[in-house]
Length: 140
Length: 176
Image (spheres, each protein chain N blue to C red):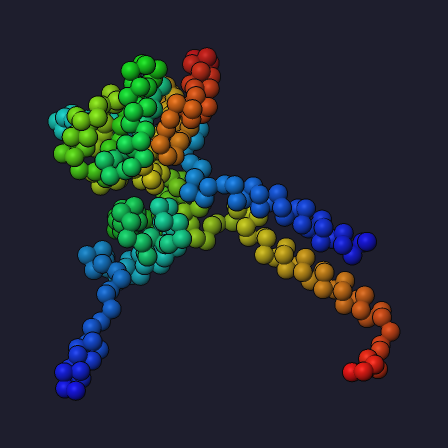
């Protein structure tokens, strides 16, 4: 029993691995906050369903290193996103910017919603025209 | 009849969307570099660290830049074709040895043959980022004026070369 308790106690002491490599952090807390926000919005092109924050692929590590360098050089967030889009295309951003090419992505949800509302409106209007029939069906 | 018409039309629109969408390989991304000036770079040569290789090495001539590494399976697959292409003398091939180990990369070329005029050694992947490289092998066709004409992702073979590169090379040489 004592051994079991000891093992349980030790297990509770184990902390989950820290996802971010401390060697990859920036000294300035303000830059660090921007850094973490940016890497959470950039797609790892090698492992397309992960952000470069989540991915261990070396390409993701390379991109994180470049982003740290750019932040330390005083580049703005917009400049950093431009740098990535110039090289990897709009697909590199999880939140693509509204432009001619990505307009359909931004408008599609609204269009689908409007389409659904239109269908609903048609159905409701048709049903409203039907006579009200409250009588329970025979045998019910 | 008309109650079936709307779903039928919607279905008829969606089917081609899905057929086209599912037929595409999501790992093949269009390169934003196409028709733009090739990124400038200068790196130590893989074979001779004292020498530099870079975009200046293939200035004023049409060339291909092949991104490769010893850890890349596709690079081994296409290596035989690159050897053939180099021997045919159709176009100079430059290599970008990407995120590799110099000793292993040198051994790779000694054992399997070296199709490259020269390979640039991009140890930390910095130049790879400028070229938008995300998965070796990648092959860029660069015109004599430094414009990126084409990017191929994945291993090359004679068919792909004939289909995708030869027409562009011929057209570019014709207009010169």
